[in-house]
Length: 453
Image 1 (cartoon, one colour):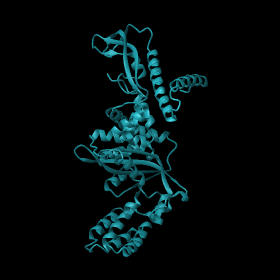
Image 2 (cartoon, helix red, strand yellow):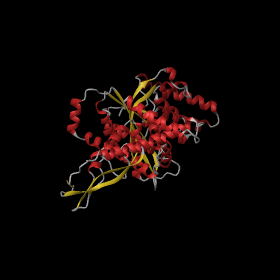
Image 3 (cartoon, one colour):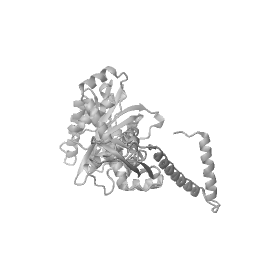
Image 4 (spheres, one colour):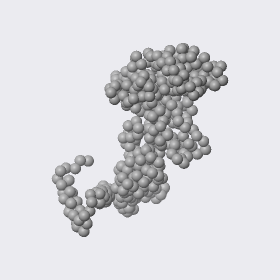
């Protein structure tokens, strides 16, 4: 809604006149006080106007009877009062009310026509409450809403709306899964979709969330594209050569998550990939750490994908081995580390493994040497970093690590938090949808929810 200039001018004049009257006894009022008064006045005006508008939308002359969902007829009884929680606070209104003598079910046609449920949060306020709950602890969100919107909303109401949005996201994902497993729909995609990604990245990781009885792994995935950033804007890394990995950054990121076993999560990986047209992309690239379950899923669903183990995870094994082998001799440790990590940087993994084998029998470093050798042996084909860099691939998994932190660490791992599995899943999915830029889609779905029977 965009108000015309004349209307704004009339309202402004009324506001100024009322403001001058209110402040006539407070000539020294500061701007913060004036703004506070205007905010509260605007809220009250909005509530009053919305109340009057809703009441005006009801039929002036109600029909004497209307069909009931049970198949019988309802009869008009009277105009009944109701209220809804809106962005302006609780808003009362009156509308025609019918009652079925057969099933004793009430009916208010105006509520159904406008998609409004008396006594509940309005479709306009719901996305704001859900967003607050997706970004902060529910109790803190309630306090923030009071400050931002001048509304007293309970912690439980924020939780309910946040997790409702998570359920809406889960429903979207179920639709994607059904589409991705429909052979006819897949053939139709192949025929009709013209624009196909040239190079699309995927990444998967996991982070543990505190449930009521145990800690469970929340698996998180991301699809994204990559763009080059100017060298002068690349931040300094702790080692100059690692800075070369910082010349690329992710864009158009979409996250997804769930508490599932790997095999079940793979279905979601494929479904979300189809939404990003990964199945039609010229090239798919996965960057992740060395977890076996991740690469098993990637190999099954995207067997032609380029597989890259995150550079920083690979380098960390050398750091641990150097510390164990040389102890306090930092000079020797640094010399060995520089030499071997340079080989790793160039993708000379066989030479790296040979260097690690020199410490297989060293009591101080034996354990770290075995860990490094196993890691590099199993992921050797994913560590051709010299070629990867020459061909312009991103070799760091910072995108998915950031996703895990934003979705799980920052939201679910709050001090004292203990979640039900469904609550953790729904809250995480709501947050993932917000981070992915899908909030408007969920808000639309929320506004289209049928009224409770």
